[in-house]
Image 1 (tube, rainbow, N blue to C red):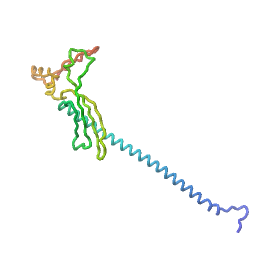
Image 2: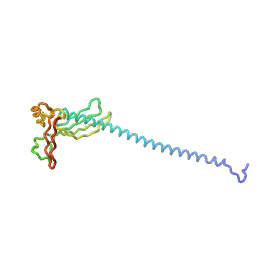
Image 3: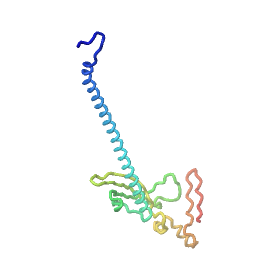
Image 4: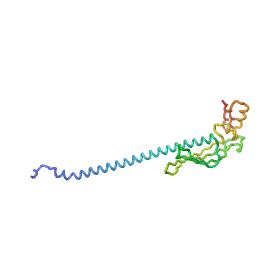
Length: 203
């Protein structure tokens, strides 16, 4: 049966358009999958960098705390001898170890003009401390480097101050007074153009 003039038929044309429509849908799916894959790659990379940053911060914070503890031990217990030494921090921190280089350094006070000669000034102990972090199956890496200095005396005990001779006046004052274990130190010499520091009185 022939179609009448002026009437349209959609059957053959609709059949011819289906393959093109399917190809367009397939292309949209492929583009969507590509965009999704790229987005997931960016997200995973960001998560990996965030986890690595968190791990680096944890290692740095732990190394700083361990270094502070080690320096406090040297400053409170006894002054270290010049040379090189190394060690670990025990079973609590099995992946950390340290290396220390110690040397004596004569102080230089070019701006202070007083009657004190250089040989009367106690040497300063320079400490070059390095903290290493070595996880299992990986090479050791430097977690922290510190360049510090301590004096040749303990921080809190009076016996060490007497041994190094820096505060011999305290011993004489204690023997004369008999009651005050923390006498006032002598007033510091005035710097050029500055008034002398007021003397502190013992409690």
